[in-house]
Structures are given as structure tokens and as C-alpha cells.
Length: 101
Image (tube, rainbow, N blue to C red; front, top):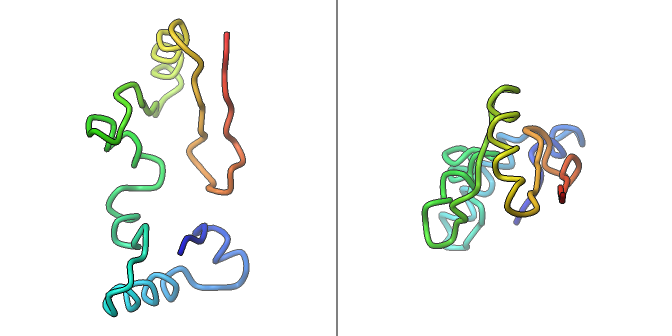
């Protein structure tokens, strides 16, 4: 089960009710991925950065939190391969760019 958090609220629903329902399903032994608790712990935008050092991650996954960090860091990584940019908001696939030199 996967539902974008922003869409739940915009459709008149409650994220808290949805999350509690998913927790209830998990208690029945039915897998829910990602679980609300994992989503809260990992953070939607930082999850890939947090697993970058694991076997399932990519070590060149980075996050920039200031314009200065982005300008300095992104230029270095662009020199080697195409990059994917994801803005730090939204989860419906908007605001994702593939950048190639």
C-alpha cells in the first residue's frame, strides 16, 4: 500500500487516520511497505541518502540543503556522469530532472 501523504490531505482525508490504519494492518501480520513508522524515521527525501552506504544504496547519493552547498557539490558530480535531481518537496513525480552534460 502506498499513498502520497500530500494527496491524502488534499482529498479531504487524514494522514493520521491512514497511518493508524496501516499500523493496524501490520499488527494483523500483513506487510505494509513502507510502514508509517519507517517513513517517519527515514524521512521522505533523506531515505536514499541514509541507505547510500548499504548494499542497496548508491554511494554517490547526496543531499544539498543550501544554495552554496549545491553549487559547489553538484558541479563536481556532474563532471563524471548524468545526475538525477529531486526537489525537496512533493512526492507525485513532479520536480524530478535528469541532467546530462
